[in-house]
Length: 319
Image 1 (spheres, rainbow, N blue to C red):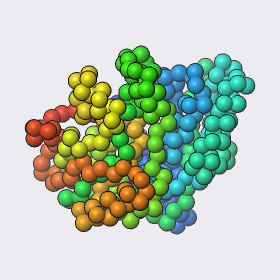
Image 2 (cartoon, rainbow, N blue to C red):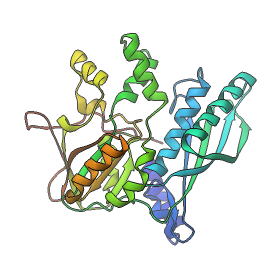
Image 3 (cartoon, rainbow, N blue to C red):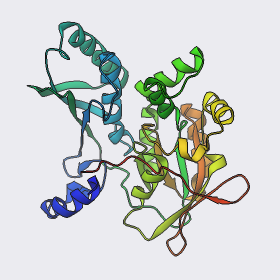
């Protein structure tokens, strides 16, 4: 079974009486009375990161992808806990020093502090991060409205290309090489958007497993579908060049995940406000489609106005 079947079949019933758990169907735990928002994620080598040759970059990616869960809910991260499992091969003094320095830089960048964690010996390297923030409210999943506009921040697909370069599956020039690998290890998080997101978005999620898959999860318990324009999906200048050169399909590249951009829906009357927020914050926000009735199937339309399918709709853990 895949990860979501596992949760629904065996663990959802354990949280039925616990309203802040949000039915185990959101990115976070949210206790409205205590104004606490919590997220937890585990990262394993060879699944979530390729190797540990650059521990300072790996830990950056891990921390950013973890706090992304809070940011996409309109919450600023305040504290984090980190647990690591590994051995003397991974946790050398040199590596630990790099990790410590890198975390310090991230703390300054996102105004958050380490509060605790755990370390255990293991032959398999993994990290678990718990992120915590405070808020009066969050942007929930499954709160989309019919005819909502669908928006995404930043650009999509760069991280996936960076991963393929690290795996030796794609070769590009040095300038592109450095650009894509940086996007893989250091995703751009839209912290400046948190306050505005609470006022603008009806529902939201971060793009961790791929645009199409995460969009489905965003509305998974609602009788809605989506209509997406492939042409409007934002990509970087370098990725656009690569798509043309290698004859890639854009919809496939942006459906691979690891982008950690915010995917959200908003009422069409807020389009001008969203444009203004984009200019003021300097954050690229692109309208890529609409929420439509569940009576119709979800569609992705290409430049020729023909329906297309994403070959790979996203990453899912299978057990």
